[in-house]
Every structure is written in structure tokens, then in C-alpha cells.
Image (cartoon, rainbow, N blue to C red; front, side, top):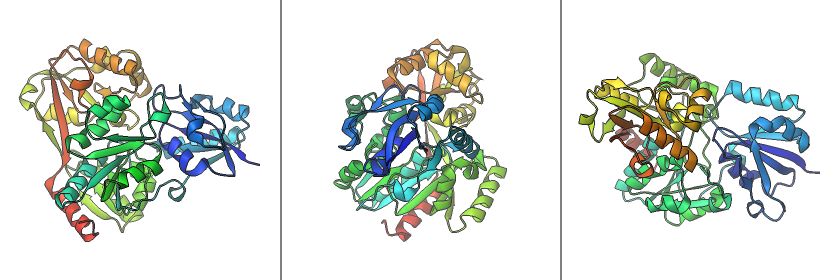
Length: 439
């Protein structure tokens, strides 16, 4: 008899795990999903069209807060955790709660969850969200392209729309594709820089289909990770980014520590802004837990399109949403830019926060004056727009990767911040790619 399973997720890893591991599994029957981290994504269903012939019903999705009653209702034998960027303490708290409800608690490993490709794959993941994965991924893409390699990026799953059947495999080659797939700010933050640099990027959650499509136009696939999650595709080279601003987190967050242990290359990023003590801690942890990894120390250099607008002004700081919410960072690139170019005053965004943006400040107590660029729905995008327009400031410094000018109707000038790995780190990556036979 099959065991009843609840998959606890956050709209991405959970669906991929279902298709790769649970869909045709003779031992398990997924009775429902739960959703966390991302606002509103539990108001959906996993359609029977995605489940295959064995499952003849839609699989419901509920808030994780209802887990206790769901275990009872569905007589669940197992709860499998399928999302990322949780402290080890949080993971074990969830495990203990599930055990107290009479069910078993499970985690799936890489061999049972990743998809293999016929083409060479380089994965870029991290120990925490906001460490600098995407800038690293793009640098690797540029190096390979300079040697004539056809590179395609594959992004971590981000199916946040209402109809999951339309989000299994998505291809983004220009900004018009955003409208085609009704993307959120969080999605555009990740896809826009790839498109701006002339790369095609795939996303979705059916990685068998995604890999198949990417292989048709790629010589090398770069997996650009999300949060601190594991690669969805089996890598031939695994690059992991560590953040000395959150030194020690490389050992205490799931599944970032798994990435840390498996890495072929570890980049200690942001050494130009992080405390020296943090850099030392990360170095010591590498020597203890993954001494065979190649180590690169990198600066995350800040570039601003209109730096002259910042000096002496009252500024509102907009930062990458996930980085300063569940990522735990108290500041991001906009804050660094404001200090570097001598803004006169940083406006406290909390005073002007509307709706779910205001709720985010209540949920994430560590947040300060910075405004997280949250936009998981049209309603939330509108609330972000209203928050910015209400703020009494001279300019907005946008430290998120998304193009806010195209997404929002803002009544203030916007200064955009970008960040790239420094030339020394790029040269070291070049040497590694050459030594490993990618170029």
C-alpha cells in the first residue's frame, strides 16, 4: 500500500521534486502540498494534467500553518520538506512538529532530485540567498561566450503565477517574454540581467523538459540557483558563493551547508564591504569542512547609472526582496551606493509601507529603513508602487536587479545600481574553466 505524503514547499522545489521523484513512485502518494515564504501562492492547485495517469485528481495546496490538521485529515505518513534557506534550528523545529503529529519527516537528496543533461553543466549556488550567485553565473557565461561557446542559462524554479500548467517550461529571450508569462517582480529580477547581457534563460519547474529544450540550443548550460537551494540539474562543476557578511551561516542553514560541502569552487564574495573577521571565519570553515575546494576571494563592485543624483539628497532605498527578507540581510546594494555617493538622508520606508509590504516589516523584524522590492502578485506590485510614491524623498536608489521604471509608475527619479565581480576574481574563474576543460 502506498504511503500518504505531504510535500512542504514554497512554489518551486516542491513541484520539481514531485515530477522527478514522486510522480511515478510506486511507494508514495502525494495527497497535498503546503506553501510558505511566498505570499499568496497557496491559493492554487497542482493540476491533474501535471500529475500523469496515476493521479486522477488535482492536488490541493494549503498554507503550511495548517500542517497539523492536514496530517490528520489526509492520514499522512510522511512530510517531505522541499524548500530552502531555513536555519538548521528551523528545520528541526519543523521535523519535531511533524513527529509530534505522528508522521515521519523526510528530506530528499541530490541523486533523487536532480536531472541529468547530455551537455556540460556548471551550477552556481550559495550558502544563503543574496550571496551573489547571479553575478557569478553571468560572469561565467561571458567567459564561455568569449571563447565562442553557446551558453544557455537555466534558472531556479519560480512558478508564482496562478496557472501552474503554463509554467512548466518557460523561455526568456527578450523583455516581451515577461508579458507572455505574466512574470512577477521576483522573476524579472532574475531574468532581466541575463537578457540584458544577451543570454537566453529558461525557467519553470519541469526540469526534464527544460533541460531537453536548453540542450537544443546550448553547448554549455549554466544553472543559476535560487535562495541557497541545491542544483536542480546534475553539475559537472559546482560553484558555491559564500557571504562573509553572514559568516558562519554556511554551516547553519539548509541546504546551503550541503552546497558548501559539495562545492568544487567556493567564492568568498563581498570582501570589499564585509568585516575581515567574517572572511576569516568562512576561510576556517572551508579548511575544516571542504579543504579540497578551490577558493576565490571576490569583490562585489558597485556601479550606478546616475551617481551625481545621489549626493546631498534624501533617498529611498529599494533592495532585492528575498535578500533582505528571508535572506536575513539588513542592507543591500542600494545602501552601499547611498553611502559611497554621499546621500544626505536615508528615508525610512517603514513609515510609508502599504498592505502586504507593511506586513513584511512586521514579519521580518530585522528589516530597517530599506524597502524590499516585493511583487509576487499584481496587488503587491501596486502596494510597492504606492509605498514608493508616498515616500517623501528626492530620489529612489534601486538596488534590486529588476527594472522598476518598466514595472511601476513612480513619481520620483530612479537611480539604478548594478554589481559585478571584480577583474581579479573573473581572471581566477577563467583559469578554473580552462583547467576543467570548459574552454
